[in-house]
Every structure is written in C-alpha cells, then in structure tokens.
Length: 321
Image 1 (cartoon, rainbow, N blue to C red):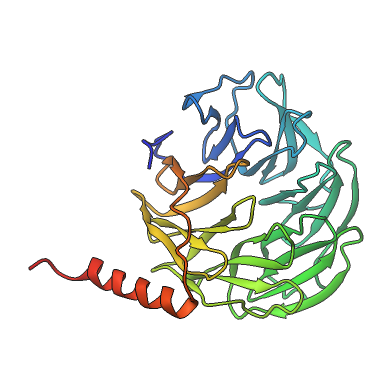
Image 2: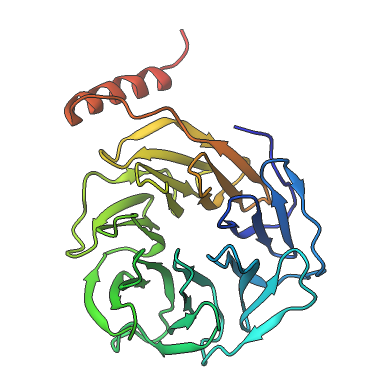
C-alpha cells in the first residue's frame, strides 16, 4: 500500500489510467482531477470543472490526449491537460450516460445510457448505432454494466437480473443470459473468452463468454462487489466492494492472493495500470489509493491451494490467546 493519493469528502464516481499510464483521471461528486501516479502530484488542467460526471474514461489512443465524460445530460470530452473547453457530443437520445467503454485499439467507444447502448467512432465521435440491448427490457429497469470484448466483436450489457451479448458493430442481440442477480460492473478477459462480473449479492464471478456458465468458484466479499478489473496479461483479477476492501485473485483458480486491501470506506471503483504494476482504488469517502500488485500465485493443485488457503484464513481469524 502507498499513502492515499487524494482525500476528499466526496464519493469517487470513476477513475481511469491514461493509455501510457502516466496520468490518472479521477471524478467525484464535485470535481475532476488529474494526477501523475509516478510523482503522486496533481497535474494542472486548463479547465476549472465543476463536475457532474458519472463516469470518465481516457481516449484509448495515446495520440489523442483527451478524456470522455458521461454526465446526467449526455456525453462530452475535453483535452488534457490544456483543453480550453468541454465539447459536447450528440448523444442520440441516450440521456444519462453512466458507463463508457473504449476499445483498446482506439477505434471505437461504446456508450451506455439508461436504456440505450451506442457505438461511436472514437476518432470522429460520430455515432453509428444506438439501440436497446433487448426488445424485452422491462419497464423501469435501467442498464447497469457494460463491457466490450477486446477485439470489439461483442459487447456485454447487464440489466436487472439479466444480460445480453450484442454484436459489436450493429449492436444486435446475439444471446441473452439469466444472471439471477444485478451486475454492477463487468470486464472481458484479454483473450475475450471470459467475463468477470461484479455482483450485488456479495461476490464476483468469472463466466464463459459464450455460454454464460460460471467458471470456477465465486470470489466472495461481505457486501456488494461494485467494481472489477483484470491485469493486462490476464493473470490477476481485482474486486472492489462496499465492505471496505479490494482484493486480488488468481485468474487460474479464482483463489485470493495476499490479504484484503482495507479502506476507510466502501470501495466504489478499481482500475489496473496499463503496465500491470499497480492498481488504483476509489472510495465512497473520497479516498484514492495506489496499490502494488501482490506476490505471484502459489504452485499446486486446486485442492492443495484450497486447503492451504483455508488453514491460513483460520489462523488469521483465530482469537489471540
């Protein structure tokens, strides 16, 4: 653990590393901040933003130094650090935009509104499609999470206790899943064959991207899991929870690595640095913290690892004599 990068009294709405990892964008209830993770210093920006952002994401192209911002009124962007003004983007009736998913190759930006999903050309910010993920979206139910497969061929969208996988270009439904719980966040693995889901019912799950079947055991917390992240090489999973902890997990076994990362409030967001060397977490009490990655996974069979982990947890919880 490193000392907190930022402490305020406002809940963190989102945080994201730049494609080169030398900037960390942070949005809360009131402001937008930009930090250099290496020096831990705030980077001055030309705009004085009184923020209503629900989500912020860097443009995935390092050549376009800008941040996309989803707000209660739609979608906009601004250049960093020297942008002079916020530029609005036609939102095609999306309304409140609370999730953004840029493709890593910088070609597309997927935008999630309350009930609609849109695909934009990330360079020109022209929208090609906008539609609901399913024609059977129940009245009053809003979309809760979105994830794009790294190659852009598919998009996962969650709503209520269900989800739909859409074709990446036309956004037409390919298959629908009965999840059985509300999904609060989601990420595809780098290979695109699995999806990591943050569940309201106090656990994260890794699911097969084709069948929707759970892969391995659940990754439990004591309260709802609000955010997930995956290391660039796919070896590590990270979960963030309202129980005030974040945790690393071995992607091969779904078993925890190291001890829980404890925070002063509910953890709302987590992001992996592009080099895979550390993560950033944000909390509902305004803390932003950088954490180093844990030790490498232990060797052994799944049964041996479970037995070892169980004994270790028992010792940690045992009362002092």
